[in-house]
Image (cartoon, rainbow, N blue to C red; front, side):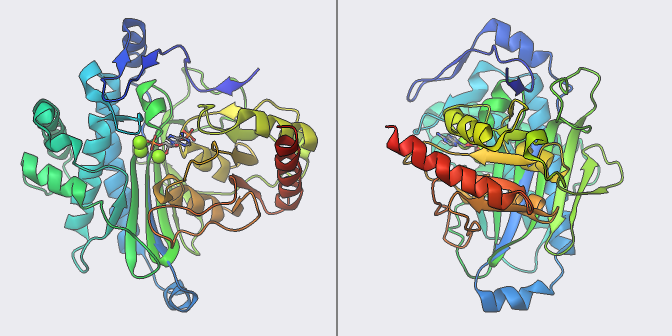
Length: 406
Ligand SMILES: Nc1ncnc2c1ncn2[C@@H]1O[C@H](COP(=O)(O)O)[C@@H](O)[C@H]1OP(=O)(O)O
Ligand SMILES: [Mg+2]
Ligand SMILES: [Mg+2]
Ligand SMILES: [Mg+2]
């Protein structure tokens, strides 16, 4: 039996260029999930060893404060949309993946807040969404709604001093995210909603924001609006009594902290110190299309892992792992899928600063300096330092066995 957060009965049908349909039962379910918090992540990285050394002693406090604010405000917009998701709010992109008004609104909010808070250098932002579809005639209503959502979110937050924005301002703010990143200089990396499928199902998602400096991730923020503040290691974690809404943040050399999205004081978190594989539990994607459940099951069996996998959407998995809810996260996308930096940058530093290790299946650390994409061997493997050697051995043996059985 597998463990997953929330209800899995939502029925979504997606066709190229078509609106994603949500049936009445799902709508009722989504509307009943207003208690769920949103997850947002941001990260920042640096690239060359010389420059990395030069920046190692730098402080990113100001950028971290701006990132936390941006992700938290964007999370509020996402929460508002998730509680009243309309069929017209969800559309299908050209790669058939869903996108909602909240993905666009979140990206606009983060871009506008970073621009406002950090005026010393021009903003370079590598982000998932762009305004291409929104500029089409048939998207006029959608753009209007996104602009309203952005302005309402700013207006209801007493700490944001941004005048009402126009539709053109929103389009421009979204398109700030077209930066290519790379090994030099500072680049923000944003996934405005990571785990859009989980968001649409009324389940887990994150706003993920990171900063790269010379190709290295130097800070990251993950807002997880629906993640319980207490551990999700146990299969009964989705109890309606659980308080939800976590904000994870990390700065290079400074450790990882978690606070509630409604503003409790932060506490330092650490990955699990578990060295016993029989007692280990592991996370993987809720969506089997995003990561091979068969391969991770083979690995778990080889390692003697007894607990069933915990399947949840988005970089909330990195957040949960950073506080020791489980000890392993396995991700094996289908052949040919290329991972993007915004899907891992914030999660990477949140786990690394909590004492964990994030490698590709070949045992190499992830390299965020190559532009918008990650160049990976097969998949991503995350655990603590003690378990990584045994885990990598099992991963590599299982990959070979699976390949020879085909
Ligand atoms: N076919 C795919 N394989 C792997 N990951 C995918 C695929 N399609 C979308 N994704 C991205 O995987 C991440 C979610 O993975 P998970 O299964 O861990 O929740 C998201 O970043 C999602 O993008 P998006 O940001 O658009 O939701
Ligand atoms: Mg997407
Ligand atoms: Mg994503
Ligand atoms: Mg996304």
